[in-house]
Length: 129
Length: 144
View 1 (cartoon, each protein chain N blue to C red):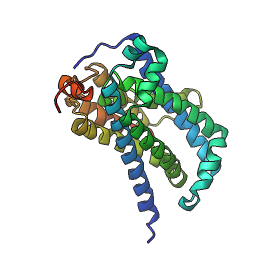
View 2: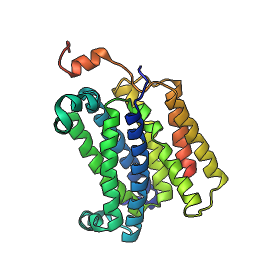
View 3: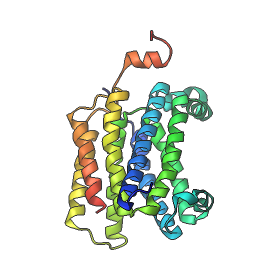
View 4: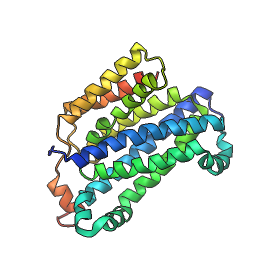
């Protein structure tokens, strides 16, 4: 089965954005679990902070998602114009992150942050057209 | 929710803005040089793309971005860091206008205004949602 070119591009864009949201939420969850890296560095030095980050399971899982996202983005950029793929991926990622942060990270996404998220998504879309 | 950021934390946010926007630009330039890729030839993408100087430069900057971004997430919410660092898009647009002498259309000016407003919204608010119970459970100190 072959996808039409436009559908192929949008499936790729959606996949890149979904990987980015999953990766960023996992990394944010891992970093929240660890706490302020400056505090860890103050106690055990830079090495201790690096080891703490690299041995956190959520961070590692999120990083793998971001690595997959990186190569998926290279592929998307090879089949779609940057002027389409760039803003579309960024806008979808901003909106998806706000929902995922509220649902999974229990962040308090107040009106100010919702407005900021929507303004950034719209602004990035307009800026790259 | 807590707010006050230290000067070093503002420096981290600025590093995120600059490395992400310049790194993405280098990647786009490098991939444009390599031409279209086919999904059945992903091996070619993995083997050849990192050796393109623009792609390699983009990768180095994005590693720096990742380190700064990770650090920021250790003291701020995801929904604070993402809009706060979106100002990098404005930097790229202004560099294009004043350095590369590109045309800045009215649509792009509106886009810049929206992002500046968004950065103002989050910068004026708290950076972190406190979850004492969840944080204790994550650290293995509380009941599940």
